[in-house]
Amino acid sequence: MGLNFKILANQKNITQLIADRLIKLTLQDEAGTKSDAVTIELDNRNQAINFPKTGAELEIWLCGIYKGLYVVDELEESLDDDSLTLHGKAANMKGSIKAPHDASYDTITLQDLANQVASKHGYQLAINPKLAAIQFEHIDQRGESDLNLLTRLAGQHNAIAKAMANKLYIVPKGESRNVRDQKLPTITISDAYNSSGRVVINERNDYQAVQAYWFAEEKQQKMAVLAGQGEPKYILRENYKTANEAKSAATAKLNNLMRGKKSLSLTRPLSPTITPEQRITIINHKTSANGEWVVKSVEHSIGSGFAETRVELVVPKNAIG
Image (tube, rainbow, N blue to C red; front, side, top):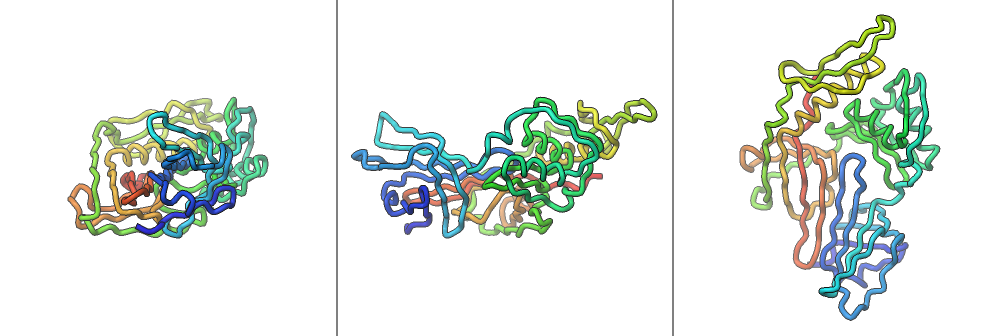
């Protein structure tokens, strides 16, 4: 198997130096706020590897596709054999954006709030236009980080906020759309002989509706809104400022509950073009696997004699009013 990866360490190409010592390289790409990660396991026979220390920046390509910039945050050396393992996280998750503090905002759109956060912490904002226009009458931030605040507010509208590679992204969840509101390309998988894995159907979360509450100042009364129909109902504990906020939060929660009912773990030959939130259509497999799915997370792994991609998939967002 020829070289199907390239690594720059602090801008120096080390691919050839480690090619015959690579045991396994794994890239984990997650939807949501969880940091993307890399793990590189090397054969350090004769203690010959003079590898960068923690804090080193790694740029990684798979099959010619750029997969990101990572910072080495942990080195692991075995006492039982000659293996050396490096762990890294996606670069530029600045600590300041995760620091808790207090703040309040009045009559502000999600874009304006996100712009303030991005500017304060040195990020460039990339936000889906449909999400940008969402307006909040009042927001209280109490002992909460700016990233957690954006994650919480985005989650009320079935979206995710994620900081990576000097950019702050806010995009729809499970709709396979990018920050420009363009549909991500759908991948069709039809060769069942190249697939392995399993489908899990979980009916424990059998909620048919989600109820949320908001406080009507004029009436001085707590009001309820409902997403979905039927019993049982899932009750959100948080009280929202407006009926629209409550409805959006209830709808987002119901979508998450519905998506959690069926999942698919799929292992394929190395496919570095597959990314989180992308939609995949599966045909010519078993009936339980056939249909449309959305990528929740993806793991690309290469090593001596193998190159594969493992994908965790969930059912797409349902159209719930």
